[in-house]
Length: 252
Image (cartoon, rainbow, N blue to C red; front, side, top):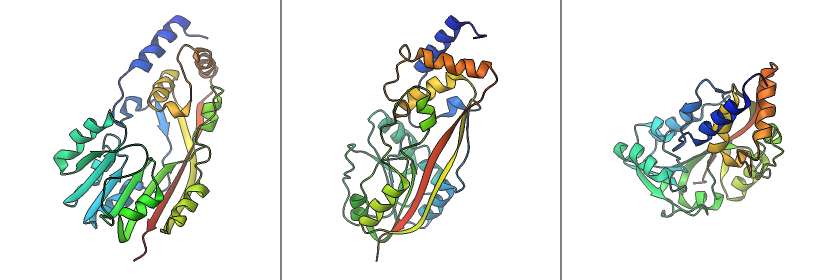
């Protein structure tokens, strides 16, 4: 490698230890180039929120995406299942009048039957029967999901196997229909993600450990060195994203 190996190892360790909170990837601006989906989830969600009287955002992370949808109806709620994100989301969303509720990772929610006319879920887990229960008749469920095969070619760089390969577009389509929701829109897409340096990869894995199960900096250092060699040889580190999108309605 053209770069000093010891210097690279020290740099990668610092990248792995860099702070990450909520769902904020601004640290990787211009270091990780992400192709956008052909649909605009934020704009579609914003239009739904503007027409809603009661809205729920599931697995809100640090509230970064949900906050973009303002103004909100009086009854607006966000849930989050990862404990470190809950205070981050509350700091972001509660000044906007949004109640943030901590929930378990089991998919159950502490809400009444038919409480919401809009339920949003961007890249979070959910149980379709629970969505059906808490939606009002005529209510809308909007979700954008990451395919179980997302960045599979990236995981293969580390000889890793993705844990959720069963979570496909077809799987979620069937789950939504089986729950009794009527699908109004459904789209599937694959696009590119490019890393400009190996340090960005280290930070990305630290933030999304499920993309490379079992990753440890020392254990996987040789994989990182191989990626650095690719860059040094003029190769690009480009991988395949998988996304899909559903808008479904509860029958009246």
